[in-house]
Structures are given as C-alpha cells and as structure tokens.
Length: 224
Ligand code: AP5
Ligand code: MG
Image (cartoon, rainbow, N blue to C red; front, top):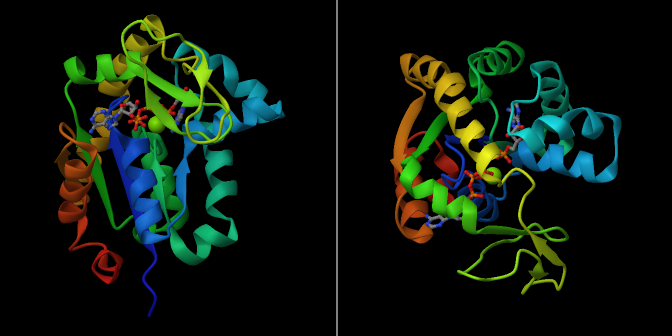
C-alpha cells in the first residue's frame, strides 16, 4: 500500500524549516505546506483572509487560531495532500493547533515531528541576511553592504527582505516561539512523536541528519 508521508517540521524562526521542507518536498514528491507562505500569498492576492492576517504577519505576532485552522483545512483537503500526504512547515505552532490537527485527522495526522534546533545567536544573522524573491519564492543571502532590493538570479524577479524580518518583528517572533511552541513540543514528545535535529551546519548536512532522524517512521525515504 502507498504510504502517505505526514511530517511536521518545527523550529524557531530562521531554523531552516522552509529550506529543508523545500528539499524534502522535491525528494519525496510530497506537498510542502507552509502556513507563512500561504498567508503571504493570500495577502499578496488581497483576499479577505490575507487582509485579516497581514497585520499579524508584519508585527511578527501569531495569526488567530480560527484563521489558521481554516487555511490549513482548505489546503490539507486538496487532492494532492489527500493522495500524497504533507510536509507541515510552521503549523502547528501552539498546543491548541496541535490538538486540533490530531482531533480532526486522527492519530495518523503525523508520522513524526522534527524540531530543527538552532540557537538564537545563529538564527539572528540568518534572518538579517535573508532575501526572498517576490516572484518565485527563492531564498538568498545578502552580503554586507548589499542593497535591500535586488534581482533574482533564478527568475529575474524582485528580491526583497520579508516584511517581518525587521529587528522588532524578529525578536517578537522568537519570544513567541519560546512561549507558545514549547508546550506543543512537550505534548508531541509525551506521545513519542518528536525528534530533535541539529540545524547548524551546511544545509546538505542538515538535510542528511533530518532524513536519518525520520527514516524509521517514513518508509518513503528508503524508496528514493
Ligand atoms: P513563517 O513564514 O513560518 O515564518 P517563521 O516561523 O518566522 O520562520 P521563517 O520562515 O523565518 O524561518 P525558517 O525556519 O523557514 O527558515 P528558512 O528556511 O527561511 O511565519 C510567518 C508568520 O506567519 C508568523 O510570524 C505568523 O504571523 C504567521 N503564521 C504562520 N504560521 C502560523 C501558525 N501556525 N499560527 C499562527 N500564525 C502563523 O531559513 C532562514 C534563512 O537562513 C534563509 O536565508 C536560508 O537561506 C538560511 N538558512 C537555512 N538553513 C541554513 C543553514 N543550514 N545554514 C545557513 N543558512 C541557512
Ligand atoms: Mg519559513
């Protein structure tokens, strides 16, 4: 029987959730579901949900659970996620969201959750240097003195800082992670659903660590 991959990737801001999920999605052909990316797309399209979420995103505050759960239910109900599973990036991030996920989808809602562990002293320079293409979503790293707005190497689109990669929003996001996500991590750990992976090092090395950490719960990894 085809095994649907259902993986949760957690970690503080700048830990590399998006970077590692993009690699895993390409390798396993499983949809990468990032709630942050979904909210940014809704905001860019000017939808009702995007308008309601935008102020929270820019301030680095959590979007209220009802909006998040609506968005996720819509995405996980799509035909690709139903057939192939999902890599959840940035959801759940509170205990209430984790409990809602398992209540709605049952005990198989996730095979395993990974916390990418990276200390604050390492994520701060990563976030300060991050630039994102507004057209293709590619991440790049600005060097010292580089302008805030440049052209994308990959698609020629406009590359800018994320609106929440300001000092104030970064510090608020990090404090929120420590306060709101810790009870979720403990809850997953109590259910034997959490592994911790060191997220410091070359992204290829982190990718390999991640594969090794989840291999026994995600059989599809051995098929590729
Ligand atoms: P979201 O978009 O999820 O942002 P985040 O949690 O702040 O995390 P980041 O995207 O900043 O970090 P990342 O771990 O993905 O790191 P990345 O791979 O980019 O959420 C944004 C907002 O949406 C929230 O603040 C909230 O308002 C709202 N929201 C989303 N989900 C929600 C939810 N469930 N509930 C309520 N509100 C929600 O890497 C960062 C940088 O480091 C990049 O430049 C990358 O190239 C670089 N990098 C990555 N790995 C490495 C490495 N190994 N070595 C060196 N550099 C690396
Ligand atoms: Mg991200």
